Image (cartoon, rainbow, N blue to C red):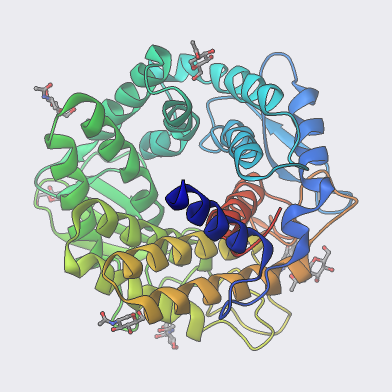
Amino acid sequence: MLALSLASLALSIVHTAALPGFASPPAELFSPLVAQKVLKTAQASPSPAQYPQYTDRTVGDWEWFSPDTWTSGFFPSTLYAMYERTKLCSSGAGDAAQWLDLARSWATGEIPLEIKTGVGHDVGFLSYPFMDELVVNPENETAIEAVNAFATALAARFNPTVGCTRSWDSADPTDFQVIIDNMMNLEVLFASEKLTGNHTLRDIAISHADKTMANHLRSDGGTFHVVEYNSTTGAVIARHTAQGYADNSTWSRGEAWALYGFANMFKHTRKADYIQTARHIASYFLSNTPDDGVIPWDFNAPLVPPRPADSSAAMIAANGLFLLSDQEFSLLNISGSRYYTNAAIKVISDNTNLAWAPSWQSLLSNGTVNNPAHNNLTGIVYGDYFFIKAGNELVGRGISQC
Ligand SMILES: *[C@@H]1O[C@H](CO)[C@@H](O)[C@H](O)[C@H]1NC(C)=O
Ligand SMILES: *[C@@H]1O[C@H](CO)[C@@H](O)[C@H](O)[C@H]1NC(C)=O
Ligand SMILES: *[C@@H]1O[C@H](CO)[C@@H](O)[C@H](O)[C@H]1NC(C)=O
Ligand SMILES: *[C@@H]1O[C@H](CO)[C@@H](O)[C@H](O)[C@H]1NC(C)=O
Ligand SMILES: *[C@@H]1O[C@H](CO)[C@@H](O)[C@H](O)[C@H]1NC(C)=O
Ligand SMILES: *[C@@H]1O[C@H](CO)[C@@H](O)[C@H](O)[C@H]1NC(C)=O
Ligand SMILES: *[C@@H]1O[C@H](CO)[C@@H](O)[C@H](O)[C@H]1NC(C)=O
């Protein structure tokens, strides 16, 4: 009895008082517009199935893509994140059963891709909704099969001579391209290892991360976007960019994927090199953020003409910082943990101030999909997804109320 009431007292303190030592997150994270807009997009449900990826630049309406696109998993996973939010919040997040129904039906549109996708290494992103489903219902056979099929597809892209999974296919099969984004897709290998007990999948993830640490990272903590290996010799033959400003620049979204990816590798393996690398990347990201806090699409892009922001890079990095904060906490580094949580809150605040877009279909504007392809200043589905996840993280930590 006493233990119970102490526990509920502790809980009520967490939920009614701001936690000392943490910055205030922006209220937009829990605006009624979040549930309203996501629901409206979910109910738009085009037929045949299509998925939102980014918006136009002027009014912010979604552009829709076929399921066989690397971004298709983000919207269904957003719906699972809204379902998760109904468990975290006593009100204001919408109807739990409705979110779960919508999440499941949007995930179902991806099922044909378990057999064949054109997305290469991005099967990891496609698997997100199925990994979410397994949190809700660990017995769901459809989701188990999907996670295992996507992991098998990624494992089949592993080349032991190179030590990596191939990101993009190329006309010359000996030209083996690995992009920094690929760090995010390793999660599905760990998820499938857990389901099947197949440790080869973990070994592949570790090998990929070790090679990436050796060859994508610069000494300043910045990253190259693309490293090309020769698949017969394993040698690095080129380092360049596809979506960044220059071959030796640091494209901010790549840096954000790397931050999240290495913090996640530490979570799964407890290898010290990975947390050191995540700290080094975080330090680059935070020290190259300009005074106004707005994350530019590339940290080395010229200031004139003004460089477009990338609010998606900001939201991905914020989630990477939360994950790193958790890892510091697990090492009992409480000040380090607090530091990264506050850094995440600042990144979210500064970029929400810039990019909150009430009249758009997306939650945020000021995303840059691909600046070399002139696709900048849009809403982006994964920017919104990581914005909602960040809100959930803050509630889960007792820092925000809904
Ligand atoms: C299992 O998950 C899939 C989508 O991942 C969904 O379509 C289906 O309704 C779920 N089944 C059950 C029994 O929960
Ligand atoms: C484990 O996974 C690897 C990669 O998909 C596969 O080659 C191997 O056959 C699997 N092992 C077992 C015992 O299923
Ligand atoms: C990789 O190395 C092999 C053997 O030296 C060579 O034939 C091939 O052209 C190289 N491929 C690339 C893309 O450099
Ligand atoms: C990239 O290389 C160019 C040309 O060598 C150099 O001027 C520039 O400072 C380098 N940028 C970075 C970020 O290393
Ligand atoms: C943010 O988006 C608005 C509207 O598209 C644009 O006018 C502004 O220049 C953008 N700011 C940055 C820093 O990208
Ligand atoms: C705690 O975290 C901070 C921030 O990353 C780091 O600089 C410091 O080395 C960590 N301390 C320990 C004891 O690991
Ligand atoms: C942003 O994209 C537009 C075309 O959509 C392009 O004209 C412009 O140069 C881009 N901005 C910068 C600073 O690269």
